[in-house]
Length: 80
Image (cartoon, rainbow, N blue to C red; front, top):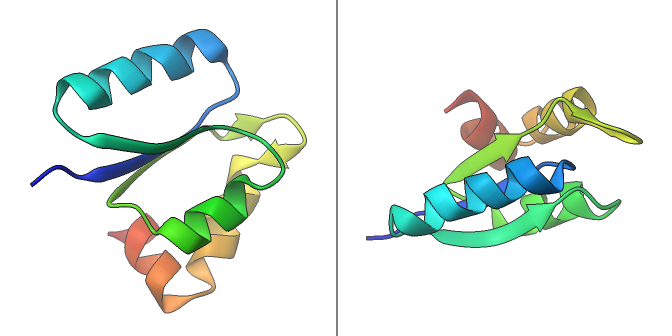
């Protein structure tokens, strides 16, 4: 069964590589980017795997991680 993967990455070249790797492995990319709505997208979708860039510019990966840990469902994703 394919896994549902989200990629929070602001570097377009790296994001493209990650998308290719995930798709080639037979998994579904739910979202790839780093817009202001990224955290809400993760919360709603709760993917099987999250690639999280820690330096996303205005949106900090550390803040996304901390916010996800606040809920049981989010914590299951980031603490796996």
